[in-house]
Length: 474
Image 1: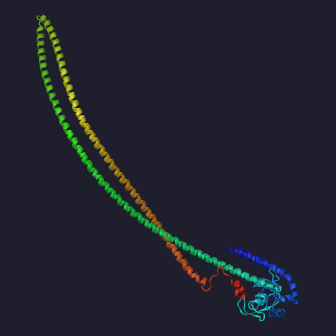
Image 2 (image 1 turned 90 degrees about the vertical axis):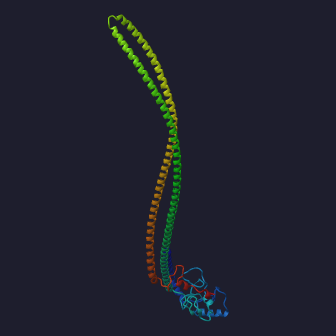
Image 3 (image 1 turned 90 degrees about the horizontal axis):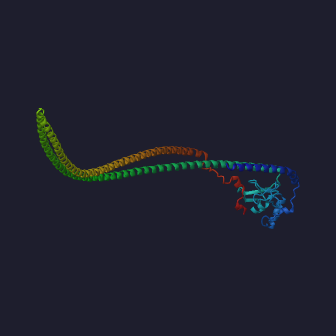
């Protein structure tokens, strides 16, 4: 397709050249017609003009006779410049007013080139340099007329048109062949792509198997680590149970000793309190008896003083009673002070004993509280470690579940993609098989084996036949 503009330009050049040649030939027709009637060969044109080495004298005489008898064309000097009045010799590529014409293929040839092919004593060459015909002969027809030149130009134009058409056909055939090759290359590329996809799918399957194996190995390792942690936790629990039992035994022994001491102190305090209560009861009974006796005596005195005769005695009795009451009050105050002092001393003693027992109890309780606090802390730490282990197990289980779900989803996606790829591969293989089948059916009809398609670079038959054989030119 890229050669079409060049072909069009070549056609335009050929048309312009033909128009120019026709205009020049019309002008030269009258002059040529006059010269044909009075053609006289000058003596200088009966000899070779030095294009090739000099011939023998007898050959030159024979050549002169043949030229004068109009059997060979005159030996004009060849011209390198192009002109419509000159004919070009296809062997030496020089222009001459007239040429000799081969009877086999109607090709022109100058006299000097003809002399190089065959001795002029005979008019037959062994082989034609153009068509390889045996015993080819030449003849001289004189100068060509304008009509002959026009007719030759038309023939050349037809040949050029045929060559252009053939070249276009070759170009189209080459383009079709190139398209077929491109299609075949595209099919091969598609097949290669499908093979790559199959290899990629196989590699994905291998990677999935490797991932499953790695997950199994990881799970087995995690189970072993979990079993090791469980054994460690059980050993720790046994040690903690033994330590807790030992602490409880010590605390129990300390509490038993403290309880015995406390019971002894409480028994002593109770005994002292009972003794004090008994003494207080006796003292109260004695005082009550004395008070009753005093009251009876006072009543008797009052009863005695109630009589008139005894008013003086009553005054004395009242004074005595007042004195006695004052004495009793003073004695009661003294006794109350003594009792109060005794009671306060007993209370202070009891408070001291209670403080001692409380201090003992506080020390024991503090030890028990500290031991209980240590046990509580250990229990809290153990519970925290257990909760951390449980949380860690839950997190690991959640992570493992998530990884398994992601791996399962990934495997599902890969399986779906692999199924789609396999479906595409099967469809494309069917298309390739159908295309190959159609190509096998069409190929015998379009390009038979006996007629190979000519490439654009191969020379055409007309071009190859128009060139002389190098072996014949030597």
